[in-house]
Image (cartoon, rainbow, N blue to C red; front, side):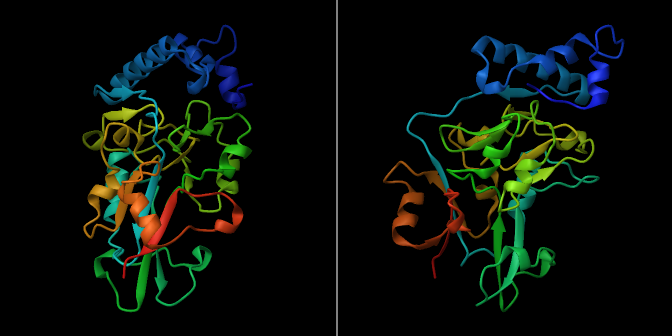
Length: 289
């Protein structure tokens, strides 16, 4: 059963003048992965019309499914990361994240003293990116790890989040009730919550979106990195990979023995965060030097 706030229930009550037919259809729609192709087309058309009215721009909303024989994996060379945060800025721009009030970022870059144990809880989240790299420090970007065994999926009471066949963990924003159980369950702090209406300048909107990815979100939903599903399912790299000035970020198909990500896993000193939790992240850190 789909859950919602008392105010929203009142607006959807029979005979309520504040409830439009479109709002009723939006509330009653199925989970995206349970829809037929015809139902998906109807939902996308309605959403494109909504965005055109709201933002005055024509959006292209994709529903492209996962490809056959693909399991996406990510690699990050900590020897090369300089903490410049360009990956963060590229992610914000590509994925229509709220800029201010609230400011949301799917990627965190933390600063650690070289030689210290990697402890995310005690890492420094706030430093001046204009002074990097700094002697004696290393930098570690952290985002959704797209776990093979994701605890966030297990705790969602309305099944608004799941793992796609290509390994990408997604969220159906229309089904998210904002309970934040998934945020509490994630050991990587890979999810963020929209406390208020997202704030995106009209001239900075990315109109090339995926239903399960970077389409504009709404207030009171949880969002996260999707490996740029709108890009990777079209043969492109995630925005953060393209933006990295040092080539520290790698991405590819874990099922392809000739892919760069497989080479890194098999030939570099790789590790995954909090492997003892049995989450099986598909995000691999390594040192090339």
